[in-house]
Structures are given as C-alpha cells and as structure tokens.
Image 1: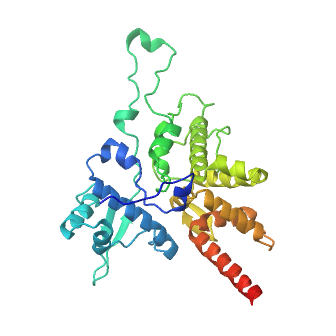
Image 2 (image 1 turned 90 degrees about the vertical axis):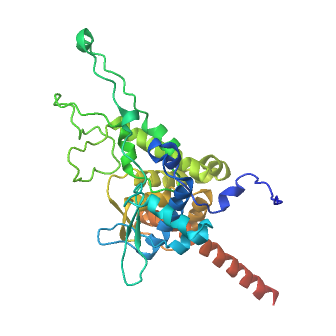
Image 3 (image 1 turned 180 degrees about the vertical axis):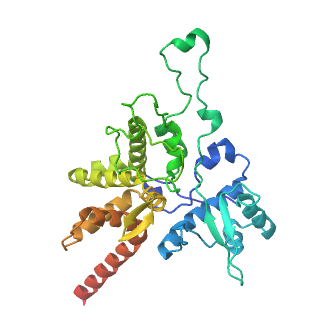
Length: 338
C-alpha cells in the first residue's frame, strides 16, 4: 500500500531529527564487510551518545558510554532476537569489527557499551607514497607527488555532519619532517594553530604543517557553512553577518582544537563530544542562539565562554525555549481576553 505523503519545500526537511550513519561506513573499503543493518544499529548507538553526555555517563577516564539493550534494538530495528544478537556481535570488538565495546556489569544490570570512534588511520592502499626513483633520476631535485587525497576533500566526502569526528582522519595529509634542515622544524613559529598543540603520549607523532592545518580549518568551515545554511542566514539577516561569522569561527576553532578536552558549561568535556554537538547545529539552532542572546539583559563577563555554552546547549534547550515562549504568549493573550 502506497502512502499519500506531501513534498518537502525549501528547507522544511531541516526541522526534523534524523538518525545519521557516518558516510565513511559506506565509502571506506575496510567497512565493506559490515552489514547495512549493523551500520544502522551503530548509527542508533551513536545518537544515544548525546543522552549519555547529558546524564554525565563517563567513566573514570572520561570516556562516554551508553546503555543500549537488546530490547532497544528489537524495538527500533523491528527484527528478531537472533538477528539482533548477531548484529551486536558484528559490531563488537570481541569477534566483530570493533565499532563498539561491551562490558558486562553483572547482577542483572545492562552492559556498558562504549561506542568507538569510527574514523580510521589512512588507508595504506590510498596513502602509499610514490616509490623513490632509482638511478640517475634519484639525483634530480624534483620530489615525487603524493597519491594522498587532500584533507578538505576527505572531510567533505567522508565525515558525517553528526558523527563523532575524530582528529585522526585529518592526519592523512601530514607531511614528513625534514630532519636534515635545522630551519625547518616541526614546531615552526609560522605554523597556523588555533590552540597550542597539546602534549601527546603517542611516540613518533608529528604535528601538521601549516598547509595541512589551513586545509583542516577551511574544510571544517565549509562543512559548518553547509550545516547552518550560511548563505540563507546572511541573506535573511544581513545586519547580523558579523555575529554569524563569529559563531562560525568559534565552532571552527573548537572543531580544530588539538586539546583532548574543551571547557563548556564550566566543565571539561571531551573535545570529540563538543565537536560532534557543533556539527549537529543547523540554521534553526543559530537563529535560536541569536534570539536568546539578544533577549539576555544581564551583563556577561566572558562572552566567549557564554557563546560557547549557548551553542553547545542549543540542541537540548531549543525546544524548551520555544515551548515556554508559546506558553507565555498564550497566558498573556488569556489575560488580555479576560
């Protein structure tokens, strides 16, 4: 039976909530062996991460975990128990692809599930540098061109708007350091960096060059512009262009940070969680933050921290805000009518 459904007009589709499956799960050859049903289940678990963050479900190491039972999968996927069990095993780190990690708690309590970051290190088949020339060609000064794809293209084609966007996928375009040139250091003063690089325990890790860093910033800016319908925002609110650009640059700054944690709402939150929330913001969220801040009459001591918290909280508070506005307007209308 075919349903009689209406068309979408303009940006109407943006007002709804969606479960999102990271594009990399569909495009990277290393995920080709994962069934589509398992990828959908991973998308459902990824969405549940937001609830865990709001409830403060973080372990002693600051890692976010969720509760997603077999019954939840049965209800949301509409499949049988045996198939749901098989899908969990397909995703699990124990015997599966490793997109989730389940830890039993005993005493009839549901297992903790750690939803793992779906980003992968560069694919050796795609990021293998060209072989060094031999013989007379080895004496030429021309350097072989890398077969690596650009960082910007990788972001726009593979990174989802809502997923937990890890920084590891951005290391693909990293250039090797010149260890023989003393003037070409990896921590050059000319390197563009929004935040000072955080210390890392990974041996041998090198920081991005200035070009890679700029590509990363540009790629995130393009992605955020797309998410919030930047062109339409400027067209409808031309006098707020500087304000909108300020929001965008603040989100880009956080998305590109090399720190492991970002301070939001006077708490240290994992940078990946904040990045994921910012990449979920759309045009309506930006308009809501603009309106809420314009209505604010109290003096703000730290406008940057205030704006950062407002943007982060927008997906959670937007519904409550407009509901209270409607209730207030209805109450005012009732008083006038009586």
